[in-house]
Image 1 (tube, rainbow, N blue to C red):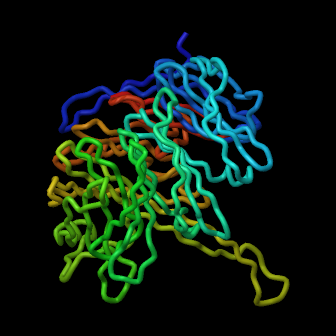
Image 2: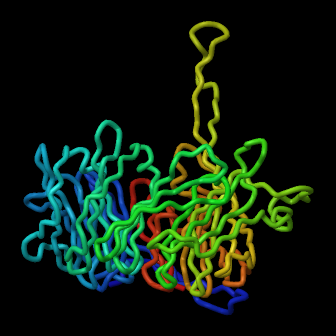
Image 3: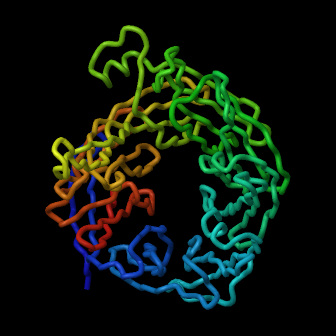
Length: 479
């Protein structure tokens, strides 16, 4: 018996006629000790969802979103929450800690399709540090093809990062390397660092260096698949605006950096153009680089008024760089504003004095896209309009999720970050053309979706959660 709902929606788009299948799971209440949730991914067993808090519960759903299995993970020697779940074609490997006051042992436990242990756990590493520091700072990063897992851990002394442990595992849990790299960096620098691992197992930590120069410097700590360590620096031609984006181009064996830059003489917090650079990942040598102002026609269209001098962007942040097969890239940026509003909540005890209440406002607005060829030349730009405003929710229901279908991408989002909003999408083709479509109305299905924490589970399907009135549901969209 099929326990989920299925809808068949048809749209006529410039890309042709296609059918869109939307499936919904039955609602479930979250366990008392597992109030958070995350979609891990899909393998041959089904769609894997983790419910966690003080307990860890794994739910396995079928392709039609029927619940196949549910298991609370409680290994005999496990302390605290699970650290990481690596899915295999069937079954998985669960990484967890067994801890004492002075050290922690990282274990990897293979499990079957119902998440029941297979054999004994494998000891990956012993970390001699306070248990609370290990729990908070142990990090995992998988390669794009999921064949390598980069595990790293910083060792602190007097608010400085003295060394960082680099471990890389392959699918069989064999170690490519296990090294301690000297860092001697401020703790705050690591908090904003970027971690990457490529499809050969080479791993990177990228830290921004404080500088008063009119350019930025990023230090790269790399360990190659052969275990050899390297250190080099990357420089940008100008000061950057907001956060940069780094990515490994596995096909062309390059390291990509893209950002907006700020060269305003008045030192305003404003973006005046974009930086697109590629580097040799082994040495940091520049392969190609372009620094260019935003096209005036683009700024005119975005702002609705004519630019006389140069175009400026004030609120946009780069969210994603998507690599092209030819070595180029497409950049997506979103407008984000966080503001605070004060209102009178009560009259004060004395005349003339009131009690005020502060409310945090989150605005996620338009999305812009730029596509660059391998030389770094801008080929096209696109503007996708949206306006999402919410209060005191940390923007959980706003922003968008990307479905990558190679010849086009889909940006899935709520047109209104509330239960009355509809689930929409922009289809953006490889030539920059875009079209907006409505997928479903949330009120009709009693949903409140969180699109940005969805998961693409195949080239033509995405799963995302809905959480409303204590009920968790899954929605699956198949194109």
